[in-house]
Image (cartoon, rainbow, N blue to C red):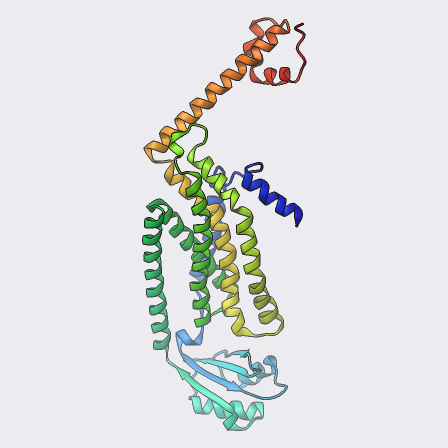
Length: 362
């Protein structure tokens, strides 16, 4: 841990730096591949829960009844491939789609008979697809309003280029999360929608933290000729890198516990709905704030005329500094008795080696 803490200090001081912005084409390619895979998953279709497509839900309470046993009994009663899950309170939940030809009362009585419980212990609930449509419509409306407010806020607090970069990162995270959800085949429930909306806030928070540091680093940038905007933005990104990683790890640990222990070992299916969305979304949000949002921001800023002029001045300054170093190296070689014609051929490399030698001049 001390080494990691020391790395964070060195990143903040600029002693160590990872060129995230300069390698933006690599990150864009990786994101493109992931989004393409997610799009394929979406094309295959989401596994919508009964709340969205309608159907009947039967809840059975019987000590010792397992999910596999209930699945076997339900398959004998229902012909439309019922979905059997365990609930948080130890009951068994059987979902039957609207394609089932039997009536709800008929299915309820036959389930009670097959499982061996009194009829009044089997709870039945019929859900129409209109409820799911209302939830989907409200969630979509909330998402659109959220995106608009975020864009307006970032444009006012920072600038429109940062707003665009943050918005692209948010859409990037949503596409990846929904695509992975489709590929895994988890059921989309209201809990899933809550998870999707939750990751937006986290992704935005991580991006804003990075952008705030970038804004501080690039203040008055055009008054100097040593750093381009991309280099200054990359420095700011490195300063917040360890903080972003620490925040992500701390956020992922409890979510991983919900997903792998609560959903996988304990079999609490309702936990899987929200925990998978959170796990994928949090990881994608950390990646996008580092490898998508900031490089995209730097690319947009570099298109400004003043930033193009800055880049030109920086390159000219470095070229002039390089020539000055070559001239110094040539003088040192001349003092050592080297032919004058060798100075231009050896250049900076020879000068660098000469700097480490003691001069023969008395």
